[in-house]
Structure formats: C-alpha cells, structure tokens
Image 1: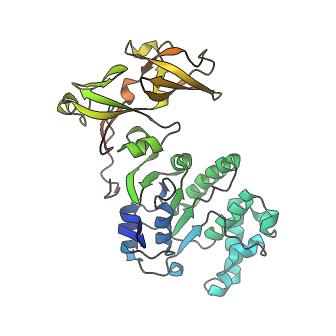
Image 2: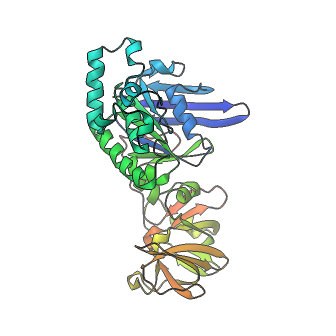
Image 3: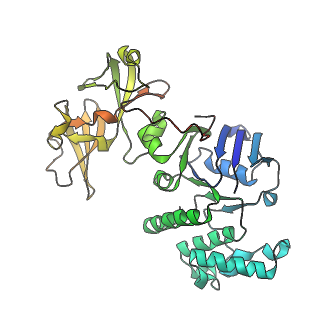
Amino acid sequence: MTTLKLKNLRKEFGDVVAVKGLDLSVRDGEFLVIVGPSGCGKSTTLRLLAGLETATDGAISMDDREVTDTEPKDRNVAMVFQNYALYPHMTGRRNITFGMNSSGSFSDEEIDRRVAEAADTLDITDLLDRKPQAMSGGERQRVALGRAIVRDPDAFLMDEPLSNLDAKLRIQMRAELTRLHAELNTTTVYVTHDQTEAMTLGERVVVMNDGEIMQVDPPQTLYDYPKNRFVAEFIGDPAMNMLDVVVEDGVAVHDAFRLPLPREGADRSSAELGKARNAVLGVRPEDLYLASERPDLGETDFTARIDVTEPLGDNLLVHCSVGDEVIKMQAAPRSPLEPGGTVSVTYDPARLHLFDQETGDAFYHSTEAVPPDKSVERTASD
C-alpha cells in the first residue's frame, strides 16, 4: 500500500516543456486516471513516476521516501505498456516470470505460487504455455497484467493499456480492471486519452492539457462542475455546447435568446451576475430538449433551425443553428424532425454554466457544487 506525491515536477526535452510544475497526490490504494489529448504530458508524467525519464526539476516521493533519482528497478512499481511488450519467442509463463529467476529475490517455489495465483485471478491458466502469436489482443493484455501482478508492486503504472483493443474488448477489459483493482487494492495510476475510460475507471480523474493540470476531481464532479472551458468540452460526448453571450442583470443575452440565470447557491453572488460582462454559456446536449417533449420546464425557450439529425438508437442527436452558432441537443429517438425545419428548444435551468471569455475559467454553475471532503487531499493545482 503506497501513496505517491509529485511536487513541482517539471520535464523539459530541449526547448519543449512537456510537464510544467505538477503538484499531485495519489492516495493509498487509489485508482487515479490521467486523461488528456495527445501531447498533453500524461505519458511523460507516468514515465517520470516509473523512473524511465529523469525529472528536470521537482520531486517524486513514494510514502515518505523520495525516489526522484532512484533507478526504476528500485522503485518497486510495475508498468503495463500500450503495446504489451511481450517477448514473441517466449510462452506466457516465461513472459510473466522473465527476470524473476535472475534477480535472486524469488525462489522457484515462490515464483510458481505467484504465477498460479496471477493466472487464476486473470483466468489465463490456459495461456501459460502459449506464445503471444497464438493469443488474441485481450489475452496478451491479460498476460502483460499477470507479469505486473506477480511482482507484487507497491504501485501499478498503466500507459493506455486498452488502446489497441477493439471497442467490445475494451469494455470487457475495463470491467476486468475494475474488478482486479477491487481485489488487489494496489495504488494505480492509469493514463489514457479516452475520456470514457477515464470516467468509468477512475476514482479520481486528472485532466491535463499542455503539460498542466486543469482539474482533479471524481468523475461526476468533473462532468457536473468543470473548472474551465477546456474540461467542460473535453469531458462528455457529445461535447458541451458553447455560446457567446453577455451577462446582464442575471440574464444570459444572446442574439437568439435571453436565458434567466438562477441565483441560488453560495458560489454565485448577485453582484457577479448583476454586472454586465462578456461570457460563454455552456449547456450539455442532454440538458436541451424539444419544448414539446418537456412542457414541465416552463415557457422559457428559443427557436433553432435543424441542420442535421443523427439517429443513435436510444436517442436522436440533433445539430441546430441558433443565430450564427451551432448547438447539439438530444431528442426522443423517433421524433419526426427534418433538416431545414425549426424547433422550439427548452433547457434544464439547473444545468447551466458560464465561463470567462478570455481566461476560460468557470465563474458560474446554476447548481452549487458539493464542497469537497476536507480530509481528502487533492492537488495544489486545484
């Protein structure tokens, strides 16, 4: 059981700054996911934790032991790679145990016991005598996980381990990883570019962009209370709609509508909503409705022109034009909507967000975020 801590961690590759002074704590036994677009620094951060990259500045500690300059072999972490990194000429068993004999740290009996336990946990006993070319992608990934488990590490570090699998197998392996973590309860840092993976796997999720931490929170908090426009648009599929508005006396004013903004809640002062300012209004597609389908939301609505409809089975995704801007909304799956027509759109007043046009920082959510547990350490970047 291990805690991990990064303090002002920085990594430069020549003139490129890949990681810009990260402060982050990973709790004992936590499954923490780092998510972000390609090139945001998430994999570099994981490699710094593993010791595969040398930090330019800052510190890394495991429990109370600083390991910033410690060799990878002395950190007692297990890395699971995107490409599995299995030796093609070795059987599953030899891939799992490679290096354990030569290290002198394990007896033959101990190795056999650990392999049997890992194989039983991952249901790969029948793969131990096969070579990788005789395994499917999911089977190779299980063997790679077995190699990590037998070492009984203080922490698992996983770098996009499911990205090479097809969609159905990724869903199965997500469930398998969740079950495995519940059983082993080993501190895990998992890197992905897939926000669905991040939301379904992480106890907390770190959203990164351009080498910096944008937000660290449980998945639902990220979704409901994004701290800036980047998080709001990155988390959620389809992405949150963004519309340029002017806030005047508690109303979001757009060329095509005027939306009253609820003022309840301690984090929204009347003065903040009362003064005129340019802003970006954020509302998720699932919080917009055809007015005819949601009369309970009142008479506050606006008109939009239908551009495209996408049948998704359980709902109809509708692309609409509102003035010169485009929004997406969800409608009932068999709604008789045709491109070129117009619809009356209403919205959930409890699910509105405002962001500063210049900084992108959120300054308003129409429901109040639940205060975080003060006993839970989050990050200095929050």
